[in-house]
Each structure stands twice: as structure tokens, then as C-alpha cells.
Length: 426
Image 1 (cartoon, rainbow, N blue to C red):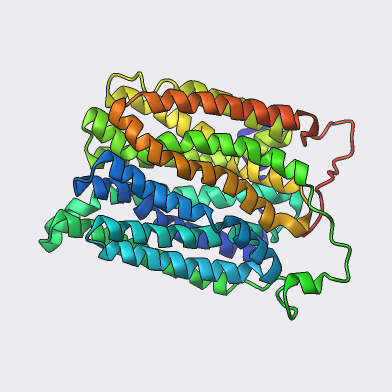
Image 2 (spheres, rainbow, N blue to C red):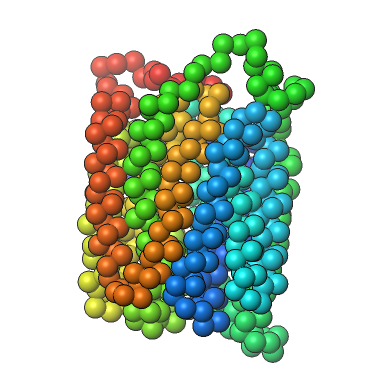
């Protein structure tokens, strides 16, 4: 097989998605450009304003906890009243959060803006991913999720490449303070966030939403399958452990580079951007690996490699050296997301999709929201300790996932017909 044929074979499963799926991917692209202003620049902005490490940890905690608290009811309401409606509501609320952060002058005002932004995202994410999953067959869901995350990461990488330079550049161009330069960047992000409403408005309503009344009422005459609670618990336990570890280090990476190596914002932006460009393409690679090797085996193998890379970060002697383990950890640990979410949905009935994603995300983001508050104080004590604690939590989480699901892998044997139990249209 020649190179062109191999490339065509690799991308064949990422083609042929319906128009609504493409509109939602475009919306994800716009959303990622807007979101990058907050998750990349917000901690750097607050650090620029000379707030302490513990105060930065508290801000991250508030933003994270409000991304978690509404997740379970949001998933239930999305399944009951319509996922598209929850998407619109979520966008409106977290756009208001961005506006409040732009206007913030005191720490308490930052806390309020972060809380509103987090709450809106909690309504938006499970509804959006569940709505997207309705736009293809279950067997192709991991490829659709992979392509959506690929597009989002490309957008984020491109945005971050510019965002690292923009606060100071805008400050010089308009003759304003660097603080107002940051605010101008946040305003640009808000514009992209609102613009995503356009492609979402152009999508079709689902068959449930075209009917009158809540989804539960539409389905009352049908035999709605029971929620497999034990399976859901098994899906949530590893995610809770991963969240505990991630919350100790991931929200702090930007400022950690400044604390440890006194790195310039521009250099951090370049590192973030390069990492995300590679990370984006990993979202296309991972579904193909899972298709051949099985989702459980692929996820476990990649996460073990990511843990090894993680251990290289705290022992790195300088910024240039730390870039390799940092990039490796970020790419490997996150490239499993489309396969992980698709696998979670494949283990549950279609009628519980939003609730399943809400539960899994609640488990991850709930514990991830708790640890930044602790991490701020740990970093005050020692800049390396949180990384070693995170590695230990990741090991336990990876082992738990493998033990729970190793006998339920979705790899297709060549001797079996290529039909899966999850091969059903929504």
C-alpha cells in the first residue's frame, strides 16, 4: 500500500459526517478560541496583579467548583427538556461570566466572575457533547469526538500563540496599561464565544425536541432502559482519581513556570501553542489506535506512558529541559479523551447519555475542583511535591480503570463479524 493510500485509509473514518455535525464542530472551534483567553491568561493576569499563590489557588477552586455543582442536574435536564436548549442557556451564562471578569477590579469580583463562568460551562459541556453524539452512529462516535476535539485544539493552539504576546502588544498599541491589555484580550474571547451561537442556531432540533413536552413525557409509552448504576460507578471512580491529581498541577502550569524558572509570558504561550498543535493531531491518532487495539487497552497504555513523562517535570533543571516531559505528559494524558468519552457512552443506554457524561465529568471535575485550594498551599511549601502526589493518584486511577473494564474491551476480533453491541443509531 502506497503512502497516499495509507493516509486515505487513516482519515476515512473522519469523513462523511452529516451537516449538523460539521456545524457543531465549527461551533467548537469558535468556542475554543474564546475559552483559551480564560484558561491560559486568567491565572497569568491575576499573577500580574500580584495576588498570592494561595489566592490564585482559591480563584481556580471557585471556578472549578462551579463547573461541577450543576453537572448532574444539568445532565438530567438536558435529557429531559432538550440538549440544544441547555447549550444556549450555558453559552449565555458563561458569556456573562467573561464580561464580569473583564470588569473585575477586586479579588471578590474575580471570584464572582469565575463562579458565573464555571456555572455556565457546567450547563454547556454535557449537553453539547451529548447533542453532538446524536449526529452519528455510536460506532463512529469516537471518531466524531476525536475530530471535534482536534478542531477545538487547533483553534486553541492558534489562539494561545497570539494571546501570549497580545496583552503587552495591545498595551503598547493603544497606550494603555498591561492590565487593560489583558482586558482587551478577554473581550476578543467574549466575541468568539458569542459567535458560536450562529452555527448552533442553524442545527436541526432532535426528534425529541420537535415533539411537545419534556423528553420523559415523549418516552412514557416506551420501555425506557434502566440506568446501569454499577457500571456508571466504575466509570466514575478512575475519573475521580484523575481529577484529584490534575487539580494539583494542571491549572498552575502557566504560573509554575514563572515561579520556578521566571519564564516570560510570551515563551509560555509558544510552548502552550506548540504542545496543542501536536495534541490536536493526537486526537486523530487515538481513535484509530483504539479501533485496532481496543479502547481499554489503548487508554491504559497511553496513560502509563503519560505518568512516566509526568515524573520528569519536577526534576527538570531549567525551562528548556522541562518542555519535553511537559509536552509529552500533556499530549499523552489528554489524547485519550475522545475514546474515553465514547467508550463511556457505549457502556450505557442512549436515553442516559447526557446524565452519563455529566456523571463522568462530575467525578473528574468535582475532585479536580477541590485540590487547587490545597495545591496553592503545597506550592507555597515546595514546588515539586504536587507532581509526585499527582503521579501516585494517576497510577491508582489507571489501574482501577483497567481492572474494571479489561474484560469489556471493545476490540473487534478478525474472526467475529464487525458488529458491536453499541452499533446503534441514537
